[in-house]
Image 1: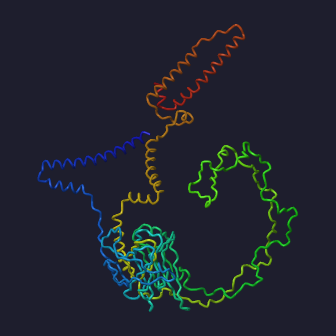
Image 2: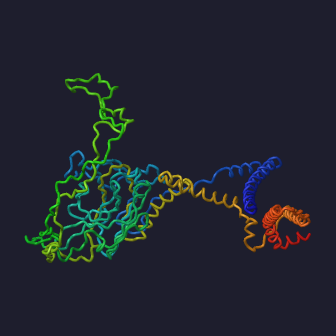
Image 3: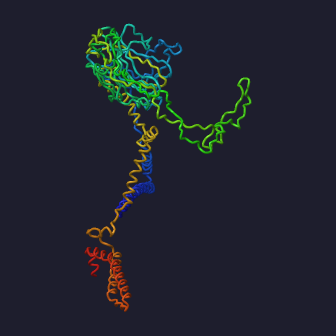
Length: 606
């Protein structure tokens, strides 16, 4: 135990000495400053500058905004840093099959900085209205044609107020002769729809493309499988996130958030419904025969109801063994009119009828086992069997579940290059949102992954760096996390309390020394004892030796002439000797144990 206490004291001394050294150093520096001021008047200004530098905290790292510039060929690039909607067209259309009051695309758009921007000068497109239809679009520098190069679509989104229900996806509008951006609406043909969408607790990241059947010429939407990643945080943290879609000529695709892949697959195998239809389909004209029997089990036609089966027996019967509890108040009702209730002053009996006081529980029933007419409780009827039904047996005529026959699919085709989609010539946002202030920025459409990464690093990367520079330290982040997840306080408390408990346990617990009795049970050598214990042992041994000598030199007691007295005396002496012998046994064991220790043998000889 002593080493543990010494270690604790040493740790405290080290900590104290460190603090004292720091204080001494600070005091020493101050003394030096005072001495310099007293002795060297010429260096006063330099000392003041040093003191000012020491007291001023280091400035936070500053991130300066610089508008991103494409580093290669692009089909579309927009950073909104000019502060205008130049090149963008607001839709004047009306949504079909909707009430006129909400059919207009009258939601407001503006180019402005984020509400809590860390990068002055960085502007974006902001959806300002809530519960409105919004539609805005812009033409590409040239139409995108799907051939031998990949397609990369990338842009930034920030839900500055979070999001209740609404989308932030983009549509790549198909190149058609009917395309009119002034009349852009929900039915306008698009080639790809991509981006985040949320309503309720359903968090989505859409990737939909419209595939044209080479057989029928009709378009059908193909939806990518849902990502395995948890998307909730991207909608709720109010930070700017970078969304990227990469389509490759080999039909593979990748979806990234903040330059991390969250979904990937192949257009031929990971879309719903599949791009290529099945070779065979069920014959729509085939009908199930009237005598087709799909029943796997039938009632046994040979079964007969037993004669003693009583279908009229009730399921419950009164308990004949029940006895009315003592003190039951038969004449007292369970509820009575409230004696303290008063008829409202505005009560009109002609309109409201006769007024009656509200019912309350009868106070007399509170101390009684019950009130009102007592009835026997109901119990299950042991003779109840219910309605008789014949047992079920296997159907000998069972033919299985009927299915229509298969026929060749007249619309079957095999498109092994779904990547070659309909060309598109514009980008549009057609959205409905119950939340305002959705921030869009840094759109780019290109074919080079490096160009998209450079654009993302110069735009989104700067925002991320600025947010990181302004974020609180580790303690602040832990406190913020605990506010969102209160159960983290338990983790924090355990993390702090457990080491403290272990230190106290280590410092305050000592190894228990075995008692002398434990050494007596074995031949293990007994540890050295201190001087006081040696003296006590020697005194005890000397007293035992003197007692033995006195017993040996004691004169014999004269025998009585009477035989009975002599016998009694002998018996008493024998009993005394037995008691003395029993008393000496522990002492002899202690002597034997003590003699085993070399140091104790030496002490006894001395």
